Image (cartoon, rainbow, N blue to C red; front, side):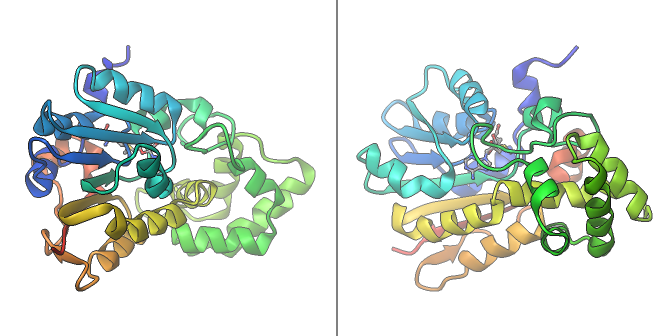
Length: 293
Ligand SMILES: C[S@@+](CC[C@H](N)C(=O)[O-])C[C@H]1O[C@@H](n2cnc3c(N)ncnc32)[C@H](O)[C@@H]1O
């Protein structure tokens, strides 16, 4: 039996997010990645009746979950990629906000649903889109991109050392039969790469494809570039990232002198207790900055 919705959406670093972002009564905030609504609820409770939370998610199913979790609190829900944040705010008639928060990546509900094709641990269609209604699927990329382009994706976004060999095996196999399922791809990857340590060789290739399918780094770059325009002077921005490619970008953006001053000098990480309770928190890094007045 699956746990009830609320128990599944345990937000990472909850106390740290609230303490560092410090949302206050009457303020207007954006949760750019509403997901199951865990952080969104914590922030909205701080904003009170006179404040407002604007919750974004590109996945309509997740946005619905956030809506249910925030029932009764002053919030607006918008289905959008967070790289559209300036347009979203313009459409709502909001000029600037007191803060923006993003908890990158995907929610456990998305990974655990085999129909989304995000996990190599269960068989499903090779999809991986966080917005299930638009864009190319992972199967499109795996079956259509050149061998060289696939190798670049595995190397750049998955830091896979054997990227060329994996891409070659994929290109050979797809001549006989195109890839359709996660299990099929994971099987070919596992046969191409020696297992090292306890990590399944499919981990890096699946991460790389997910990043490519959803243009995750491009979206993050556009969000980071938009933040100084939408956060009012004195307002805060916070991002939780889960791998070095994301964290590097956040760190660099929040270092812009004259734009941000650091609230967290080093990234905040989960303590041993949280890591034991919530495995997802193990790679989480929270960085927060304050918009220079
Ligand atoms: C880690 S979950 C957020 C969990 C949430 N903080 C909570 O406490 O329940 C990330 C969510 O962000 C969404 N997401 C990822 N990239 C996005 C993007 N570029 N634009 C909008 N939503 C995005 C995913 O669909 C997912 O629902």
